[in-house]
Image: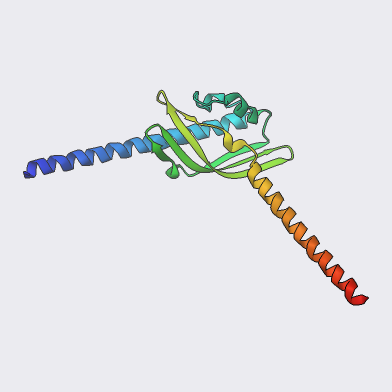
Length: 165
């Protein structure tokens, strides 16, 4: 192989990597901008239907999660952690904090995005749903501990009454 062809391959590789980096940076900026606009829309009490992907199947059900005004609503994320998973998809770890009346939620989750016709959207708003699996597992663990304590108490009580007699 000639030196000129190796040089050409190196130049093409460097240009391709620079383009990749430029596209990734642009994706991160667009997604960060989307999150900030979404947050502002929700804080103002508006329905964020414009932020949900047109490909979402149960869009109406997901938009129901935003009925009523939030006392406070914020999305905390690090823009440097926005990751392109595919050419048209991205994710970012985030913390969702909201308060509405007596209800508060702080949830650590991943936000998922997709690009449709050159525009970035949330793939879903599932991050707003109550974490029933977590709640149920904590409740079941509490129930199991309660049963164990009751069993130990009854066994101790039975031994105490047998020793006393």
